[in-house]
Length: 481
View 1 (cartoon, rainbow, N blue to C red):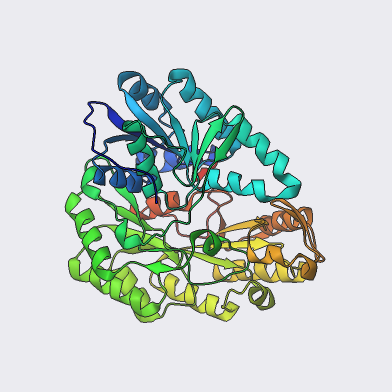
View 2 (cartoon, one colour):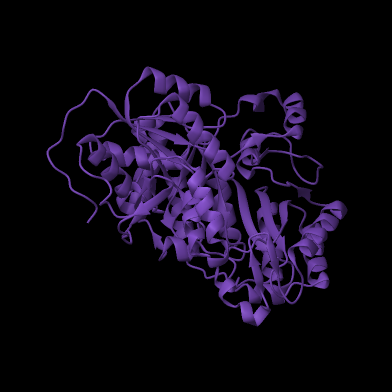
């Protein structure tokens, strides 16, 4: 069980200040775009989903909260709030944090303003740092990173609403928090957790109460209709981390979207489901529901390229879809089989052609260097990028040490982690050189580098003319400072 709850204690204090990273910063090309399209200067940032889910969970327990959406762009607002108000807890979602250095800096800045209020970290970024302690050859590195992060607590839970509300409740009522499962307590220079517990989570039980955010959405929000993924791609750790795929009921989704529509301010929704259009029958059912209710917001999503047909794409357009993000990964069928993608290049081409036929903006993502990659297979990826002509990302493969393929090191002679790997076909440096060469030759697609796809879809939603191919460096990039 997740802690003790007793009689509520009334307080005039604000129980929690929630802070989120946007993880982004405008780079050189941004101002060229502002000159061309002045209206994008004040494009709203997407409302941080950690804030909406945690805020809803706190409110359910009669705990009050305040929030700031962007640590990077609004730190002066954070400082003013901390000085002007009395909070019992300051919570930071690290999910969109760029790196450990950025997190260390943020915590130190907040501690300079207020060294007494408990500061707690959660989210997938700090979760990944804790996971790094499991890597024997890099354990000292990750211990060192944690030592430099001078927060008071860390919550290690991907679905942390219940853990977090229990934590805040216990702080408010002077109940010890070190016995709450998945809570790491800072003891001198290290974080200690007394117990862990696997969280049972059903998305229908954790739906955002959008009325709490009326007037504060900025017009752009995130909605989730499922958790995890129903596929088993060998380069992806989502299923391992998020558990079994669970889809929300159609009734629950419709109720939430009706509430969003009633706010009268939401213009764009990003559906963050990894498999929004799987199964296809469920996807079409949702789209028909969007159309029936005549929702006025536009939307974009991640989709499985092979899992669409012409009827589905027609419904997407009629229901307000403006864009689709596709994880295509490679232009080589043998590599797709190695990745367990359950898709073929021909299916990719057919799916992209359908989306483009109905003027849905397509962003495709690829990487070079997966085990089995050769110079020849990389050339095939280049040819696919040129043939289908979309916005696209192209990077060297990143070896997450917890993905399924990482357990097949002997098969591929695979060594290393992250951006320092090698296998019997190539190493990271070679993959990175291939990526650089491929990008230099691309003419029929628009390379986004590290640009933000939500920013691109913001522009699309305002009917700005950015149809590829164009050599635009659009978007936002992650901070590296």
